[in-house]
Image (cartoon, rainbow, N blue to C red; front, top):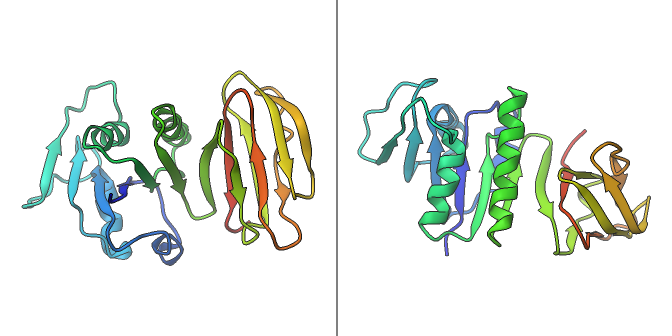
Length: 208
C-alpha cells in the first residue's frame, strides 16, 4: 500500500535532503501553508487540507478539505486522522518540526497517536529522523552518527541500548532527567534500542 506523506508548513531549509526520503508512489496530503514547499520538493498534492488561515485557499481540481478555523484538531492532526480513516498503515511527516515550538511539540504527538494504533510513522526535518520506540526494537543505522532517546510519557523502564558508545541494559529514563541525549553509533554497524515499558522518542541526527 502507498505511504501517506503529510506535508506541513514548518520551515524547511534543505529540500534536497528531504527529497531523499520520498518514494515515487507516495500519497501526498498537504496542509495549509505546506503548499509553499510543494514546488521545491517536486510534490503534486493528492489531497489538500486546511483552514487556510496562513495560506490562500487554492483554486484547484485536487481533492480539497476546508476546515473551520476554530476547532480542536490542528490541520496536521486532522490530516493524520484522515490518513488513518483512509486505511494507510505507514506515515511520513514532513514540514512539522521547526518554527513555532508549540506546533512542533503538538506534531510530535501525532507520532504517539499513530503508534498507539499500531501504525508505522516517522517525522523528518532538516536535522533528524524522528520515531517512537515502544515494544519494537529500533535500529539506528551507522550513517546516523548521533542519536538520542527521550522519554515523553511517564517513566520508561527496561531500556536497552546496544552497539553504541554509551550502552544501557534494563535502564530507566523519566521526563525530569533526560540522560539519553546524544549517544553515538560505533563500528559502522547499526545500534539497537528497545524499551519494555513506556515510550521513547528516538531522534536520529542527520547533521549537527
